[in-house]
Image 1: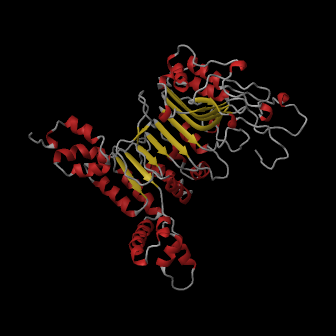
Image 2 (image 1 turned 120 degrees about the vertical axis):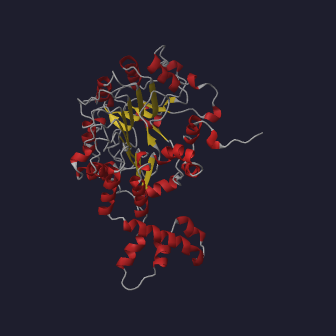
Length: 506
């Protein structure tokens, strides 16, 4: 059989092949031939991955100075991770000469190397690499970082998306009506960041790196590129610190008139309190938004006694409406039933995709009033407006025209509902996905038909009825439906009656 050169294939086939290659392979393919170079380069340079350090900045600067390569860059993905450097601090505080190698072994050596108990001669190369990395970080001063970012952005004519992420993920694509995530990885990133322990380590070492997000926006403003920014993504940030840094940023850098997509994931909550004024300002000044995805993990439990909840009303004004909004995703958020319905109704003409995961329909009372031990829980209604997810399903079906609906996590109302929603266990799957309750409910919302929710009479309940003496349902009956593993009542998430004598504030 005669062999064929790869570059003899039609451009359409080569383009399809390159679209699935990881970056390491794209780099090799690019140097194979002139034809492959022209096809692989747009995929390789479409996302420019930038790290804190002078060498990474110089590499991107060289790309921006190239007349051809600069036109390929669409996204700057900035990883703000900086290594812990306790060695330098201890050395500065120590009088007299110090051995940096010994200090490094004591304070900054990686845990795996510390446990390995290697001899010093084998540890020296690791120390040298660590020292080189420290020098690389120190060479990039904050002033130089801002100047180089602005200069680089001004020389990338096709740049339209900014990404801040401790863990490089991929490029943003607005919802297109297909069963795909809103953020797709177009070129694989060979990063050693999959370990949960490594993720936690990087998060703990970079709690105050939220200002790097604002550096990206400020650089785009300094480069007169705010009108070109159409998509922004950020992840692994603390909401309180992020908002505090945003208040110190230039207000003009938050005005992105042509922004069509925003995906913000606040994974940490170390800040003292949470506020959304900066996010509210960005959203209010982006009239063309088509894709909004917000994840704010301040909701550790569906018990609404927990304070410092991030609420939808903190970020989106009551009269805010985006005429072209197609996709909306909320995760780990708190809202009243009325606020969520109002937001969805305002966008019923354009909205086609909706994701709701770990959502608490807040009953209305911010604090449970239980000063009187003799008070009957059934009489404590207060100013509550208790919503129901079973009613919400009917609301979504009758008021929206969705092509895609996704539920997940715990959907609760702070009273008598706490539905745990998730995918089935694939190892024991005994029926097709279309027969499972979660998928039947999602399909019912989008396509109508017969309601899959069958409320079960108490004498026919299959699940064990919890003794609700300890549940704070305020007199509401705990509803039951036919359950399966994809949609079931999570008794542990139902709020308990608070014991005033308990040391537990919740």
